[in-house]
Image 1 (tube, rainbow, N blue to C red):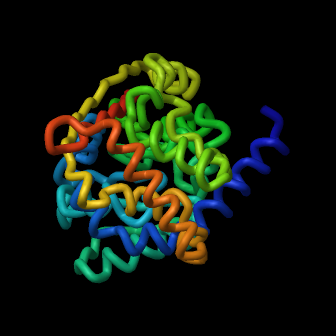
Image 2 (image 1 turned 135 degrees about the horizontal axis):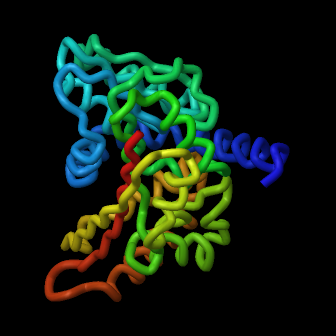
Length: 280
């Protein structure tokens, strides 16, 4: 990919996520409650512990950076970063509300980190690497800022076919709302195939690398309209400015689509995420 094309995609990604920032901030507490199943294995894979100085990439509105700040304690620190200032502002606000004093915040693309070599004991990135146009450059930067023997852990979504939310939401956005589900370089399952993360980590210069699969099968109540937060996060301010009848039409299509996954008295969802771990 040429430098101009990568810059264009990065700009498009930043602008599109900025439009979603308000909805992500509104859903921040809800997302934090759902985050445990992804945070715990990611943080463990990176080897984060008390007293560590950790870099979190694509921190969004705060997780797992906020949770890690409590884990590393007063002798450690967490530096939260994001490409989008509007997203990171939400994380900083939540950190202040929680009284967390061992956190730093830096707006930066993950491909151009403004930190010295060998500055951190661990690097984490949850649901972010697949949105950069040059994930190999991001991996190389993570490798550069890690101390020898330390690890970076990147969590991404698995294949689309293994993730109910992307199958359903993508179809409804495209067929019912006429919205390109991949607008703004939204490519959530881009690195989801087995081995894709290993290739990125190898290209980034890590000495060893491995992948882990995370699979969940949550059962949810169809009557709870559980997809509404998903929809808000996906299309951001567009949903807020949409006419009532259009929102109702999308809502009905989501309900009908998820009804196809009903098993007994619950909707049976499938979730597949992958963690790539690189050691310096």
